[in-house]
Image 1 (cartoon, one colour):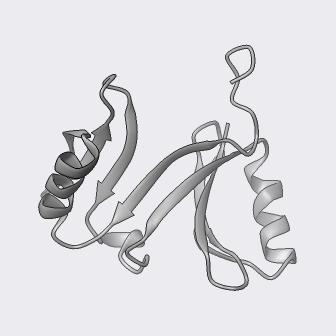
Image 2: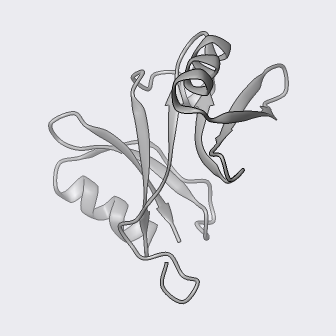
Length: 126
């Protein structure tokens, strides 16, 4: 952060979308030391994982809805200054957009993209 502003390109967070979220949540609590808080998604809870200082560092999500097809890998969120421009650049360079941001795009809007050779990440407007 620079003067309270996130620098473009900064890693903001990470999510893991998997089945058996409770077992995965418990694994990371015991191995990494994270604590969890449930995040209601209606009929089930996803989990916000926090470090020892109580600050959120990651999420563990059920494979439901638009994120159901994501591979079971840690999805890293990178900050971008202009989400629309970044999505245009992604497509121009041969990447794919798997999850479009909700309109209108504003701070905290995000998208899930895929690099042409298959790596996934998320980009979020700061």
